Length: 304
Image 1: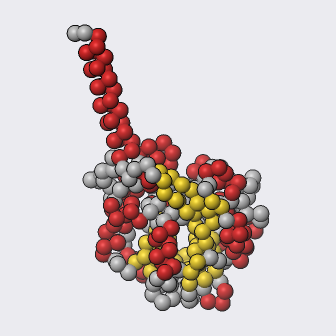
Image 2: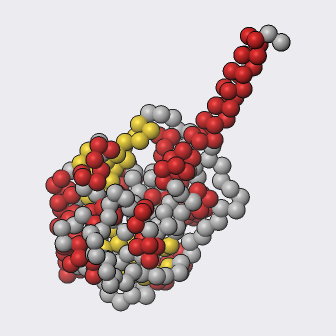
Image 3: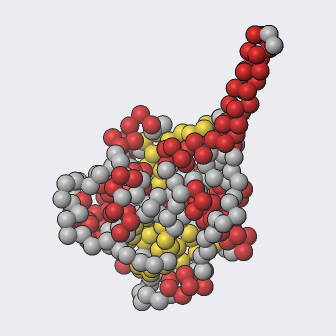
């Protein structure tokens, strides 16, 4: 066999192996048969009605910053053109001016050069809202959701209003570079719960580890009956739910260190809910079009 033929065979093997690796790490998004997760909406609604008091009158959405990723990093196989990944904080407004915050975005120091936009005025409004909030909830412990809390100038004072879960406290490595000041959590008692926990009238936590150990969804039923499900980063965008497709394995395995099978189970359940519960508004972690549609529908209001 000539050396030229051998060289061609070697190149062909390399090309095949490279193609297989590309498919595996960039395109493949098969749902494992044993990827199980279920949300009992009857129980969630029962718990939402179990706490006395008035439910939220409105939900406000504050866009604080944005990243930009290749589409395949968001939905495996979607190509290499870039898509905006906006970063939001949400505020629930109850009667008598009582408020709750869901997620706290991040500042420009934490985001650094990875950010393609940062709205300091929006960040300042969010930070001021933390001062006034009676309840602060975090969908998960990544910096773009917990960073506004860790960087708050008086975090020790607002921690009594903050309901971090045991898993969120136990995994500070998932928040890096965000970190609580030394000693800030001394004596802090995090939440420990099973599948669900009511924390305010119309507000229920749903445990959903996978994207991170401390991931949870937050169900909100407004006073007018509107139902909204904040899913954190189970899905970055609604397309993940519609197609039941995860982020590229390169992203989930090497950068996010997800439990990929757990996330697939959650995506499949959210897809089922999307079809079975058309009035349930699902809010992915970083979908500007989904938030804009909810604002257009009057489900949310823009800005704090």
